[in-house]
Image (tube, rainbow, N blue to C red; front, top):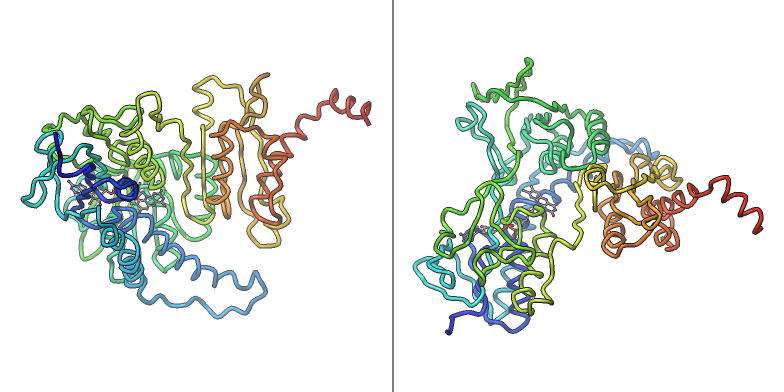
Length: 473
Ligand SMILES: Cc1cc2nc3c(=O)[nH]c(=O)nc-3n(C[C@H](O)[C@H](O)[C@H](O)COP(=O)(O)OP(=O)(O)OC[C@H]3O[C@@H](n4cnc5c(N)ncnc54)[C@H](O)[C@@H]3O)c2cc1C
């Protein structure tokens, strides 16, 4: 059987771009189908524009802190055209990187349009039929809108529209206290909007450590962001240009705009997965096995569309694993679940996590201890004016697992960089002594990681150990 292409990729977000780039670099003939914009959600309406906005907001916010650093204060700079600047960045990246790649690589075809399966090896797009030996579905997710009475009658914002605003609104209510809700609340507040977060969950970033959520809420309070947790939303309406969100218990919030950041949904209708024999659950995504293969043996589904970890780095990694698995013989195929997935919420303070959470350790019956070091005890953090946060590590306590690193949470400046070291430690099954014995450049924030290792060691100094030390000394 011959096919038009070795590989067809549906969706050019982080997962699809990883497959396309790698497969074409390997000399395979690739067709990539994209219905909106190259780079997917991450590049166009997710990670990249949100981080650009956060950077502008952080810079403006720093004007409030000049006095803390013995610098003259000149008031807050006014905000000019943040969204136009972001659009310029995106256009530049597209020209130089994403679209650029398709122009440079001759074995890589870009088909613009919406793909639908005709059979397990054939896809229709814009009136054309493409056949491929292997097909990779990497279509991502869309923002979900919760079924609150009245919400459909209001011009809500989602991540798909918020970066196209003309200006920062005077006020914004945000439904959802996860990563997107928290990041946007802080960015828009620092750029001049009065923001309120309202959510069903009991603390900010419900998937993460409750203490980190509380730390962030405390910090948000100082910046003027109101947070309502465990709220049952009952009504949304717009009158005379003002949006009102109501929740049980007499909560009423009024604002100019409403951002919905309350989870994701799957949108597979157009794909016609049934024609390819690809099974999916409308609430959980496309079914994949540990090798990222779907129920059709020539079709893989890396990235958000399979519902395992909704992060760009996970999507890219899965793209790479799926492509390699599609070529490797059975015993050499890789189990994508074996790779740890660190994550970061890029607020100030940043919150990051990797490995098992305390809840998961308890559920699995693992004997663990908590080792913690705090930013407020670290001279460099104090002198740099960032003494807020902590590193918390979950390490084994059993005879054979003593000091084995199972999970880490870091809340504080630089945590998005620091968490990767702990990710490597978990993936490589390292112990606290390995972190302690690694020299860390000083005075970096990651030096606190080494200090956490030292704290673990000092905690071993029982009266018996101290006696031993004296004897040896
Ligand atoms: C505001 C925001 C901030 C975020 N920040 C971060 C962050 O800081 N770090 C992080 O790791 N993650 C972040 N994320 C999550 C990240 O964007 C996603 O995890 C990532 O984009 C998923 O990649 P993907 O390739 O699986 O899917 P996507 O990026 O969603 O790409 C899927 C692509 O498939 C296309 N497509 C869909 N159906 C079809 C079809 N039938 N035919 C052709 N094309 C189709 C879509 O148009 C889209 O381009 C953020 C998300 C948002 C919304």
